[in-house]
Length: 288
Image (cartoon, rainbow, N blue to C red; front, side):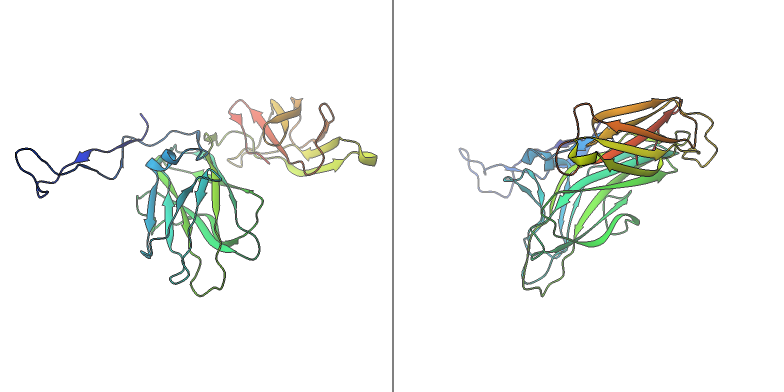
């Protein structure tokens, strides 16, 4: 069972009524019922109703807080030129199993260098975010107009439900105000402690003389996530743009220096981002 939202029509007995008239019903606030989401979890905010399971707190009570941005189909902040910002948006609860590593990620952007805004992201077990002590992203200025992927690993040692809080906290007194945009909130399935650690020494060399190719080099991991020795690896896979499989190396020796060439289909002109993951009998390991 996963979390669901619920609301009801409420008619106050104090509203005017007679034999033929009763007060107009109002819809109550939606609340979360049921157990937490089991990863993998993904929210792209393509519809305003996706906010139904999120909690929004306008802490400085200025009427400006997190909203659904219909133009960009994402979350965005609002701004106040008098009180600054002190606003939270909190995810629904998500279940983390003991002795696993989880990857939490999201994309964020701003309105440009002339309109920086400040935000931090934390994680905790309580519905209220004020005591969340696990820092996903420390307080920082957000202004890049190009969407940036933020990824954090969570080393989880106990079975629990958690929430993630995005805190907009730009101080008052600035002569400029922009917005922060948040999209693609994701929690990957947990990775077993006995899976491989991430590869190291990852480098990408572009093709010679403008050729649309690239050589991806890396060193195979030598230990598990638990830090115990890694005795075998089933395969190592190389991806472009997170989802395009470039190639793989089967049964590599732990610690070996390896190369995979990306030429079939070819990288696109511009910036190409590569990721590498090793796998063993416990499953996929950490991504580099």
